[in-house]
Length: 317
Image (cartoon, rainbow, N blue to C red; front, side, top):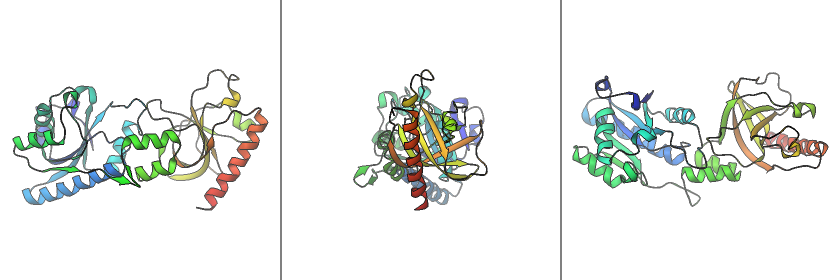
């Protein structure tokens, strides 16, 4: 369940809000270190339910509208879906601009305690909050203790092959086209979602029809190039070859090009998405960078080679 606390006040029925243990953070991407936080939150909620003799639910407090300069890994709605899929009972959020300038003491008393009814909290070692990011885990502990709450778990960093797992590292892997590393840090394939839009039928004229997705300008841009990927539609992961980029071979022919995700489904597909349908693209492997070819015929030959490579890749899985 999702709750926008920016639309709620203590007087508007928050007394019915259950006690909770709340995980704190932005949770962009909901990567494997975030999942450790969420697992700890669920465990602590169970412990306090037994200790207090009443229900204590697991919860997350996160932000809407906090966007790094290079873009987010997931959009806000996808982030909430991923958090809920981890088994968290409630997800509370507020617009970042509404809480960014709150003094740390006010954030704890007004948000965590009065609105969320927190009896425990979980955060990462590098969590910051409040005006000018003045609050850290130590400040959070002191403020909670001042209200008689001693249950705060601060989790240490999580490492993968010597890399400290973070949203920053995931964004870097995505921007570099390193889909294997991104998947390892996320604990799942990196994906993008959207609705199929009309294209220019260039691929169809080249006997290589594509489904087209506009890239979300608020999200980190994957490295331009060709990928082996699966197009998830109606629960079916359809092996595909995907191009991310601006189609430089046809630059100028159709005017200014915006970055686009072009999906060519492999093999004979009886049913496939139509314009307006929502699909997700799960990136499995980077094949090659986007290249400007000297002619459409040269591009077509290379696409044929890419398709053959993709078919061999998926046959071997």
